[in-house]
Amino acid sequence: MIYDIKLQITYQYTNPAVGGRHVVCAMPIDGRGQRVMASLLDIAPRPEERLDRQDFFGNRISEFSFRGPHTSVGFTLKARIERFAAAPLPLNTIALTAMPAALAASRDLGPESPLHFLSPSTRVPRDPAMTAFAQGALHADISVAEAVVAIGSALYRHMKFDPKATTVDTPATEAFTKRHGVCQDFSHIMIACLRGIGIPSGYVSGFLRTLPPPGKPRLEGADAMHAWVRAWCGPYAGWIEFDPTNDKLASEDHIVVARGRDYGDVSPIRGSMRISGGQNSKQAVDVIPLAV
Image (cartoon, rainbow, N blue to C red; front, side, top):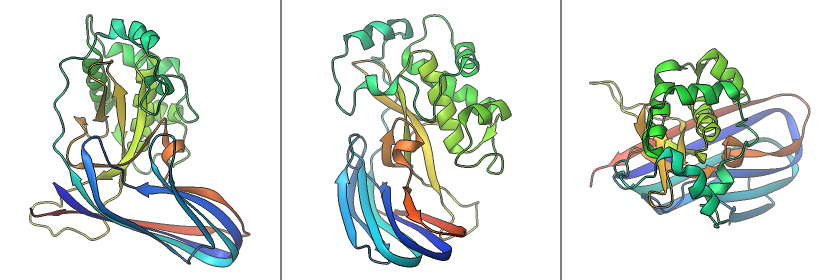
């Protein structure tokens, strides 16, 4: 499937910002099921400095800065992506009981190493309640891949998607206690559950193709950025990706932007600036499948 993607993010400031330095992580990446055919990130106003690079995990990063006053910042991403059909659940995954030995044998410290994704991270704490929840979804002799799906499906049944329940800064423990949240919360909670039982797991940010109701036109700008989970299933099966918000393995409807330990590694924009007063932001996403 080939998609045309457009992302627009704008920030409007009450008073002019005096300088600023920001990092954008919004450009889709190549590999593991998708190919970037074309992409462009435009920043307005034009920054005085800009550096495009890859981070440790292979994500595409744009660093830029402003030296003078400005009342707004806008980002426009346009990309054409080919997304391939997802592989089925691997059959060569190891048993969950074999995971400690597999991790002990791992000597890889590169970006794909499972060792980076096992310990607590900034937004994914080690939480006894989430570990107990994960253990309750398992059965004897379960494989790692089966455990990933079982825990993701259990969260889907017990959590309610509620965009009003949390914010981008809500801790995973709070969202889990409420049993309400959005895709970011679902993903952080699932990662904590998996790490709690010894399965390396990480956060995936991207876009999800959405379908309008039957007979209704597709609304421009109505899509949104999405998040799901990746988990390491052993040295033979490698990584799989699961979307707990929708109770399914990531498929050709999931377009990957970035992968990291949690949202903090892959947030679309972060940075600092000198300003007094507030700001307003808007975001619009279009994921348009092309006939091929």
